Length: 442
Ligand SMILES: *[C@@H]1O[C@H](CO)[C@@H](O)[C@H](O)[C@H]1NC(C)=O
Ligand SMILES: *[C@@H]1O[C@H](CO)[C@@H](O)[C@H](O)[C@H]1NC(C)=O
Image (cartoon, rainbow, N blue to C red; front, side, top):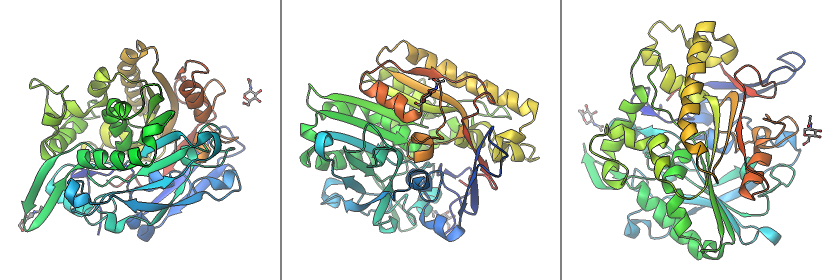
């Protein structure tokens, strides 16, 4: 089953026939320092969310450390039907739990998987036939890498914590609730909120209720879910525990695209209407376009618990779908630039710098929040916490000589405040910029 084509759906990190090249700038020739990952069509049909499980290298980056990542089994939510917590197709949602040990045994790191959104019944219907809409298609085991790794050299601060990866199968960042929809004899379940509640309820009983420290994280659509659920997460934990949130690649901007259209806002408006999100969000008011409610810019205004914003200034997914979407580029003049930031013309780079400025302006409001942190590097990438190369390795991207893992750890444990903003592209020679042979097919 082919994933739907844009703009009917945007399963962020989803693509077939994609060849990803990770190029490190400023190294002896591009070829020598290039990690190549060929993701085959067949494999990708089964790993629509590959960014979440093996973002930049097919081995999850273990080549950098020489140790194979742990494989962690899938647990399906019990009595899911009774709890009303169901994937788009009505199957039970699931998560992968790896128990912590030693000093980490009372610490919990939760990761919300990403994978775009579906905006209408047609695009949700095709998700029902993939792991992004049905647990019937989910892998029984996934690799835990980057922030989920149990290898201390790859994940210095969280390696021995209890770790959970919650699978994404509701199409609206774990936040919808509609009883059910029936169309052409097919039933659709929009129950992301119930999935969040049911999984948290199980984890509370598995030890989360006694946690001394807890960290809610997520990437892409899961990064947006992290903003949405951060305060609710706090309420599940003991009062004296340290609880924070990390949203990776989830700061989606409400920008005008290259043709002056608000592509993301229209997209989000469809998602909000389809899944009844307006009623769910107290920050949503009737003067707003429905889609506005779903942007982090609005959501963060109301968050009380500390959040760390990890985002590249030139998020590759957003450049391809929010700034320069295919539909707004009928001449394909942006094609090369979307595939490889090094191929952008000076005019296109101006658009990208404008996009970076919009992110910085949006983050400016967050700067007032004293206990929040951020790390905005100038790389062409999307989701950096789940891969050892971008998270923490000798060749990691750095800002002020700190890897992302070091910066996030420093902030989580209050070793120092972290508010890092990188200089403008192409100033940072440590970036691993993604190079695509075909754009993300959403
Ligand atoms: C329902 O059927 C009609 C007519 O065959 C079709 O156009 C429409 O796309 C279908 N809807 C869904 C959600 O499959
Ligand atoms: C950067 O960090 C590394 C390891 O963390 C350290 O060895 C090196 O001296 C630092 N470089 C500078 C210029 O501070």
